[in-house]
Length: 247
Ligand code: ADP
Ligand code: MG
Image (cartoon, rainbow, N blue to C red; front, side, top):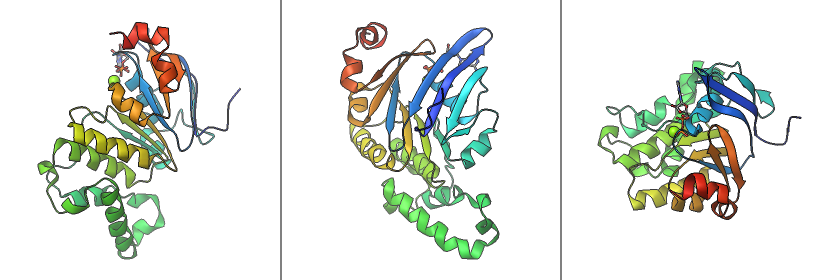
């Protein structure tokens, strides 16, 4: 009973760690152009779900289809080539390299014949670096060493490194942790822009931030989906208040 109209279709997905069901028969659909936020208490299985989608963790059962193609059984690096981008909680930028270099090295050279035609390609790469740098608000610090960026700027750089690969599904785990109020605002604007033409999944705890960005909210609890819908619907759901928002 697969639903082929969605960009991402996760169906009956499960994973156990030593007999403990971290993801328990979970079904989730995400549209193209959609920004979905996943919330839920610690240990609900949110990060594990992203690990399964990007191929870092192997499921015990179920299906993950992206644009109608089955992803389970496909290696993590091949899923990246299929357009799956994942940002982890701790940024993994090259601190000694400039912002420009960080973006440049993230350009997917090996993916096309252009990799062999480096000279022809370099203009295209440079142009893409500039596009992405403006998108993430770092166009004026391209020559700066990345280690000297603010915490927020480092997070944006990492998002930019993912954008260089033009992902069709972008997954971000707690992207505003440690950010200032101003950086949070700018991140909300950024996420609203970058979900256009692709799908974005964000795990987040800050409900004010969630309200700002979410098209739809999925609430996870004990490896299952507890509730799903608009921010308003989810916030007034007694089950959600009981296990999460009430605390
Ligand atoms: P969340 O991101 O919602 O806080 P996680 O997905 O990190 O939750 O974890 C869900 C549950 O699965 C937790 O109980 C966690 O301890 C367990 N878990 C996650 N990854 C592993 C792993 N690789 N090995 C064993 N247990 C794990
Ligand atoms: Mg987590």
